Length: 503
Image 1 (cartoon, one colour):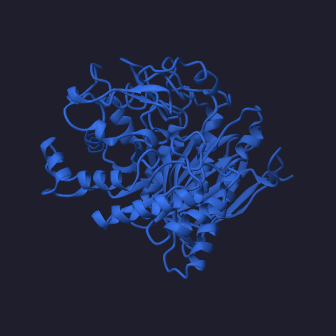
Image 2 (cartoon, helix red, strand yellow):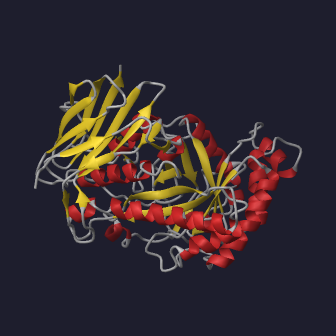
Image 3 (cartoon, one colour):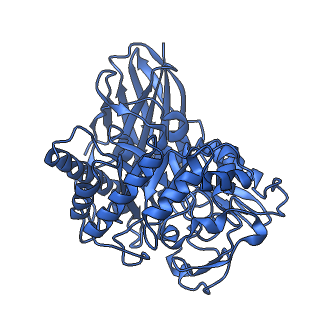
């Protein structure tokens, strides 16, 4: 087998424009995501509202455009009214989703304040588990109406004269899951989501709505669920959601790194299902995709079984990520970029402490996990037009996948900056991969930098005592071999960002 790969890109062969919201994230009232994560009054770096400035800086470094809130499973039992008004009057509630106590010290208004500080927008979820259209019309009136009505005037009395103007809303969460409070059949959820969508858009026609897809591609009803839900909601919603997590429980890294191929199939199946309903409805509107939960998640499963119930903000779902996890996260980001024509929003779940790129110690430091880096690189450098990658690569067979290319890659053309960025993973665990890039249609270019994330230990992770054990360097070897030809050697098991300036 010849260990050599090539990639041709042409500026006229376009997949689609990147919607910046593809680089979104997620904050749920779960574990230490809120309390001890973004919010920790009394911390040396807490601001006047109790938000941690060190965490805010790390979030800003990711350039996160949108953050989903407040859940997740949590939202299906959440009364949003518990989180508004004076702090001293707020109720402590049992959260049945995660078997904890929710103190409601952070609610809608505080979260919107945090969004402004983090330079991000909110993707707000409404409760379609224990509640329905009535609650949804109230929360959108409270959030988006200028004044002169009960709920908008109540917001003003809480110190928020200007409306929040939240433009993206999720119609519940994982409503096909038996673990979900108020779980429903596809027809039951489709009807509830349709009626909720109608009243929300009657209150504010400018919003966009996300209907719940299946909780994962392994659900027995997938993709029939999507078809039935869209039968009911097609006229009223703009997106269908996808959720998927991957893990390496079998300690089979070659198979683990191939799992993004399953993500490719998942995305394409949902697109096909949405397009089938569009055809069936004789519709003109394309339903786009919101991949609003995705990540690696498996490290913390055993520890989470031992948590005592009914505590406040226990350490839950605190996966400590390693180098191979960062490689798969890079592959998953590439998967979504390869369908940027239809995947318009996505949320890495989650942002802080809970299966997250950012970790904190209560009262102490905040640091970057390994997965922070591919997420940051794509968010910062992956803005523009995704180009069709014509790739030749040696392949391998894994336990669950065949013909897995060692090279996983995509290119983004930022016309405004006259830049092309290549994101590439070498899946080979033992050998470097020579790569020839052909930018024939772009003419002359130069290499700005070649960023590499690599480590001899696939299980290496960043901890409070070794925060930089896994971090990228700019010592990659990409070089121009002729006007529009670039040669690079991608190290074994590496994430690569090759930035090119068009001359």
